[in-house]
Length: 208
Image (cartoon, rainbow, N blue to C red; front, top):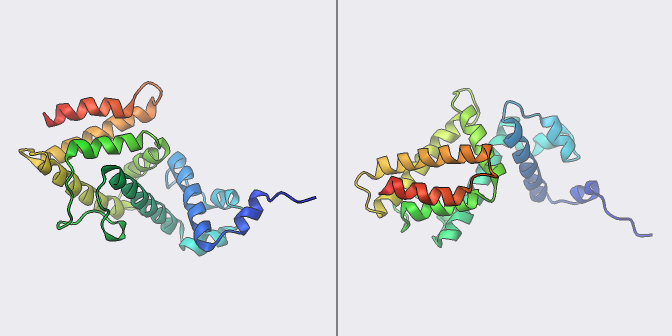
């Protein structure tokens, strides 16, 4: 009788890159639930049918694993968002630079973002939990989120300028603040709040 391959067999047959991606996806789930300070490498190792030493072989440290998760999520989500907007992704999947073409307005950008976020509450929760934790300077993602804030503001300011905002920087900042607030309410009560629909109403008030 032919033996059915179990989960352990499948994982052992993974390439190094496949294994790395599997660990990142598993870690994403744990961090979204417990944050970084509540993250236990042993729990991830058990879920991945490997030892903690094997886990660290791929990422070097618990901090390295966290940053790998954030880097992967940013690049994956940015690629999906830019594809939705039909905007070419900058080389390397990085955020837009000052010279990159970005012909998108703030309304279209934020609506596309909330429509995507509505399909992945776990990822929104991941960033919400970590951004709160990373306000502390001793958090391993402190510099990461400071840098991320800069490129997100640059992207949103460019978009606000495309919309003809009188004060693009202020429009970008207020828009991001409103999005964060709405998404927090949505995470608490996803069954009662239609994130994308609520945002379409709110963004028109901000940009009016």
